[in-house]
Amino acid sequence: MNFQEKDFIRNDKPITPAGRLQLHQEAPSNIALVKYWGKYPVQLPMNPSVSFTLNQSKTITKAKLIPLKKPAPQTDFRFFFNGIHQPDFEPKMADFFQRIEKYAPYINYFHWEIHSQNTFPHSSGIASSASAFAALAKLIIELEKKLFTEKNAELLLAKTSFLARLGSGSASRSVAHPVMIWGEHPEISNTSDLYAVQPEFDLHPAFQNYRDTIVLVEKGQKKVSSTAGHNLMNHHKYKDIRRQSAFDNALKMHQILQTGDIETFIELTEAEALELHALMMTSQPNYLLMMPETIRILHLIRKIRQQSHIPVCFTLDAGANVHILYPQNYQSKLDKTLFNRIESDLIKDHI
Ligand code: DP6
Image 1 (cartoon, rainbow, N blue to C red):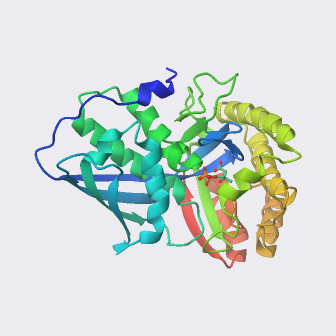
Image 2: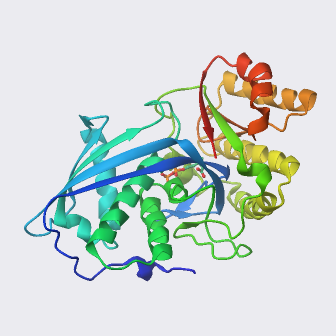
Image 3: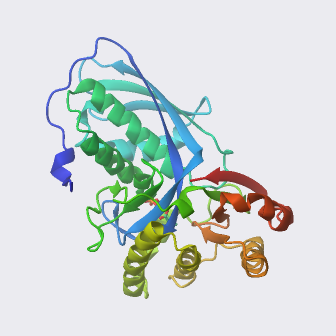
């Protein structure tokens, strides 16, 4: 089913809750294999992306809701991270609430006290806006389920992704497992720019026990935010080439995940990671997020793959950290050949 924007609008009156409500949701992080890079207003992707959903790296969000006598003109909330009030995060969240008001006007019938925590180390530099906005979107849909009788599960899952997207593009893909596709592709059925979908096939067994070990080369805040990076794509000299390449790669990845062709998976996943960073290095102004340690690890991965025939490969997000992808049964071999040669902290996750 392909939903349109109007399907997500809510004009009917909610049920009046008897008293305070408590909501509790969690959402995982995800790692893109084919990257979302470049966007149009509002939060529409320049190209389709394909990701693996992670299992261990999550945001857990709880909210206490106090009903208001009349709806607030804008969402009335306070945000706490690890138990501490975080006024610095609130403007970005206020923008998000404003963007979703048309689709979830019922949020303004309450005062919200929102508490979040991550299962991965704070300021580890791994993308947390994806899991954070996906958890928040899930919380809002949990509320919608309580206040309305609408129970169309397919619509509500698409709407969760739709709302998450309005917080952070990659968050649209953090609402289901194990693979998500976001962005309309003429040759992949039911895809949409408005929300991410699960592919219409079962992931090939070759990928079902895949691991993602994240090397924290650089912890802390990113030097150039993803949003600034996306903006540089608007006038990028390789914009059209990139768009075409991402459409081709999304289709190829869609096939690989069905057929289990690990060799082509490795080739394509690494090509996408390097293409993302090549776009950063050729934008105006250009910038460089990989560090010497990033490059050392990329070479090491390729060397071990060649020498030991272990099907291990890398991908990168918009930072210096390396995501190392491999089938689970190679874990102990890699512990002895690769991970013992890395001094940075590791986060072990799986899809
Ligand atoms: C390189 O989703 O963080 O990780 O929509 O501005 O919040 P905003 O950007 P964001 O961009 C993620 C970029 C990426 C690739 C990807 O996850 O597809």
